[in-house]
Length: 212
Length: 185
Image 1: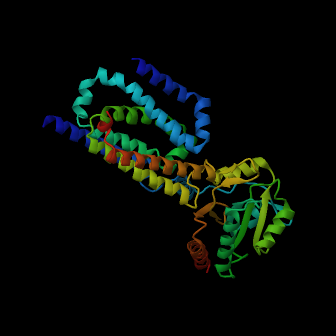
Image 2 (image 1 turned 90 degrees about the vertical axis):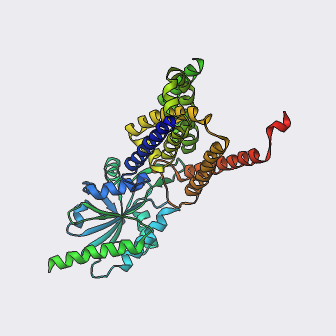
C-alpha cells in the first residue's frame, strides 16, 4: 500500500513536470514549430525595416523611405526557385487582385524582394515581373545588392535562407506587411490568401476612417 | 563500473563539438542517432546510480510506471519539430537536450523496463509505433517545412526514417504474438 502511494506520487510529479515542460516548450501550446514561434515573436516585437538600398526591376535604387506613408506588402523569393516561390508570387497576385483598386498604389504597394542578388539582376527581375503580371510600379520586384544589408533585413524579419549547394535555397515563406512608418505590422500565412486579403483590407479601411 | 565508464565515454564523445555538429547537420542523424545514443549513454551510466541508491528507485518507481512515463514524456518532447530546431539555434535548449535525454530518459528507462509486465512493455511499444507512424506521416506529407534549419529533403528522409522504425516495431510486435521462444529451446 505504502509502496503504491509513493508510486502514485511519483507518477503525479512526472505528469505535472511533463505538462510544464510541454507548456514552456511550446509557448503555452501555441507554437509547435520554430516557424510559428518566430511569427508570434515578430508580431509582438514589430521590428523596423532596416535602412537598406533596394534595386528594382527597372534598375532604380531607393530605400524603404520610397514608400513612406504607404503600407508595403512584402514577400521574399529568388527567381530561379521552382517550388515555393512561384506559388508564393501567384498567391501574392491574388491578394493584389482582390484588394479594391482605390487602395493600390495610393495606400499600399507590393514588393517582392530577392535574396539571390547575384542572379536576380534588374533584367531577370523584369522578366519575372512580367511572368506574374506585376506592373512594376504598384508591385515591384527588387534585390538588395549589398550582402550585409541583405543579411540585416533577413535576420530582422526572421527569413531563414539555406543554400542547398546546387544553386537552390530552402527558405521559409510568408506575407509580410510593413506599416507607413516602416515597421513590420503583420506576418501572414501565404497559403491563406483570402484571410490575408481580408486582413490587409480591414487595415486599409481602418486607415480611411481615421483619415476622414 | 565498466558500464558507467563506457556510458560516460559515449556521453563525452557525443558532446565533442565536431561530433555534435556533424550529427546535427543532418536531420535524421540528429533525431535517430544522436538522441538515442544520448539515451543509451544514460542507460549505461544509470547502473551505478541504481546500485548506489537502490532504495530511491525501489521507493518511487517500484512498478516502473512513473519512470517509463518520464521516459516517454522526454522522448516525445524531443520529437516536436520546434525543440529540434531550437537545439540548433539556442544554446540553452542544446544543453537541456544533453541533460534530459541521458538522465531523465535513459536512467528511468533502465530502471523501469524490467519492472514492467509483458503487457506493459507491449503497450509502450504500441504507443511508440502509433506515434512513429504519426510523426512519419507528419514529416512526409506536410507541405510546409517544419524545421527552419533543415532542408525539405532532410525532412522527408526523417519522415521515412520514422515510418521504417514503426514498421520494425510492428514486426517485433507480430513476432512476440506469434512466436513462442520456449518452443525453440
